[in-house]
Length: 426
Image 1 (cartoon, rainbow, N blue to C red):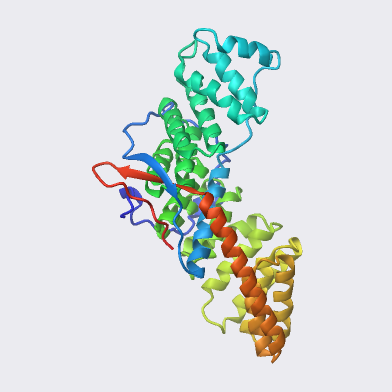
Image 2: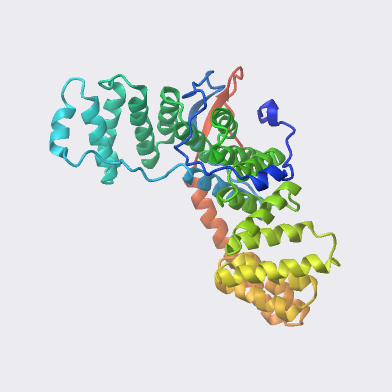
């Protein structure tokens, strides 16, 4: 199935940092603070898709493919988490009792009572009980006829349905909220719901609209970048993550997405390397900043004889493990550096530290087995290989259980008669 990508970024690359982007960083933008310069935008066209149903998640084959899919699922979840900030006004007024709200909810035109009671019950963890009140609220008109309050009711009803494992109802409610009030938060949460349930093309469309309406929303660019990456459009994804980091260079979130993505690639675009270098420069005491920049340098080194880069990578990784002694991937990368130098004693020590920091990191055991073979310790190598096989099997089973819990949206695109099921690309 062909990915539909807006013409403005169809050939995009992650461009190097312009001088102005470094010397004059954009001010931080809160996820709910931004409005378009001409006022609240309108959703200028009907969506080019329809979410028609849900189906069980597909199961990819092969260990390498499975690792890629798991990482993409993590990226989608991390993106959705950007849209779940705690609300400062998540409950009904303390002066309004639950009993009085229940009584008022049955009165004619009781939008406010139903909505406030639903919010109160959600805040108390009673999502199932809140459902009928929120459904009734969305069927009634607010006293002042404002679209914003009605949109809030649809949005909260969407949250409840997602929590109750009814994603189809949830996505339709998120869509309705965005149609009534196309705010940054409503558009983002609609796109994130589509992304979470692997409707990549619809998510791209919604995040693209959100980026056009709110060009200074970094999380909208992150959502667009992750949707493109999960759909297989890697260069375009990198471009938008770069743009997100340039909006507010002090925000760590876009860099963390870049770092996770580069772990799946043999090489990263030059622009990502410059952003990760900036991340390490701006946040030198951030362990992940040092680790991700080290990995990027390692990927971009000229050849195994590039001792200068190797030494720089080693220094960054040692700093990362000092800042976070539980950062298992950094120890493993140190082991890789030492293995290339054939410094097997230090490589073995680093792999051991990696496995101790995260006993479920199967690659650490695999590389440790290879290092033991180099030193002639065949019994230890065999033990590590057995651990590797056990962990890989356990991890695959857990990933399969988690994948079965994901419900994929089945959707149609305008002017297409089929109902395709999206397939993640490795």
